[in-house]
Length: 221
Image (cartoon, rainbow, N blue to C red; front, side, top):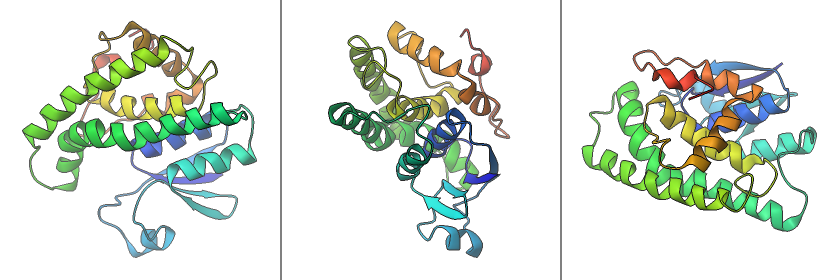
């Protein structure tokens, strides 16, 4: 069985968990306090980051690189398009959410509200939270615009771009920081993803001291 060293509310770990579950790859989840790195963990990944996946005797790091590697080994169900233009758009949007959305929203909301407390790094920065709350509106509006032209974020087929966006939003939904009323299209898109079997492991997450809102596990939210 594969073994994934992860943090439950890490969007990068969640993206990989969704990919593995969609590919029906059984994985043992090992929570890793990467902010208090052990010598053993640093040997697994000298960068000191999660996720780290042990798969078929190999240690793999960096979420997007791992997802593409898994796609090459297990091509069905397909998450990365074959056509160059479609593959470009998928990768562009993965980068959008892992870089821009992460910096403007995830870091300002999730990391301030949750990670600082868990890591014992002081109190939440109210200005950062205010910035994150404002910026998520822009990103939801952008997603609404994309979904107004396509069935899924990167095109008419579900791709890794959808899992990447859903990974970030699922973390924020856990702390009730997503206004699902802002866009009916985004709400419908997330509901479709949330109903997939691959999503079950994410919905089962429970972080001590941080109970999710009632709608978090509700498929008809």
